[in-house]
Length: 349
Image (tube, rainbow, N blue to C red; front, side, top):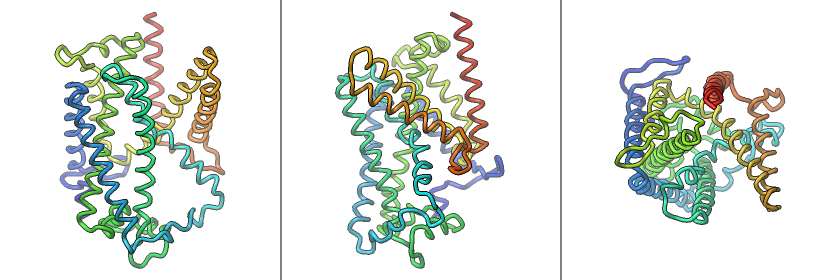
């Protein structure tokens, strides 16, 4: 049953000592090409498909969460202890999660980056973003609740359960899925699998949209080559930007899921920098317009972004939550690329 979820079939090879299965690679490539095509078609079709994916995501998690709340075998006792016994400083444990939290909010900014293609007011955009963040947070909480709402036979705490899953076999290596199976059986697995797939695909679709429109805007402002600001003759979408994203993205599946985790860790720093810069701009704008509330929140957000960046960049022994060496490697490549584009822009101005 584990193979059904991991798609570990077909020819496989190793990257950095980790197995990469061609079954997973081919499925990832198919999704990348499909969503590149959908984004070229424009928001009229991607918006409808995204709505369907969101309904599947919310519906699946809601159904399994309801089972966790109503199943007589589920118990709030399983939520204890609040921290693993080997964690002496709870503040450090919380900071370890906070350090990667900017990444968890990446994607909620898709709306403003594609706002020109929608026909609703900025006020509605703000409402949609707030609702999306609330539902996103509830989804994260619900999945954690589902995982520890019921423990397999032989375990007395979630600490032992999670630790054992790292060396177990089959479905038990996926604690959330295994708990769902104990709650609802095969039906639960289908519901949660549908929700997870919808989450992955909706994220992929949203990132395609956000990144392509960002490249388009940067090209229009002459930060990037004009190639990225050319629109499709029929659908009026930034086709070249979308195809560029596709060309870069097809490399990732061949590197395996473990390598993608390193990129995600590196992206947490990028999110912190992006949010920090935006918060500082908001502060300057609010200062010029006398908006005290935005000035305060802008400064607070900027301070938090600095904190996140320090936690990720500086290897503080006591905290031990900085980026791994692999993430530093990808960060170096990304920084070199950014410097190249920056220098290219300056040379043309």
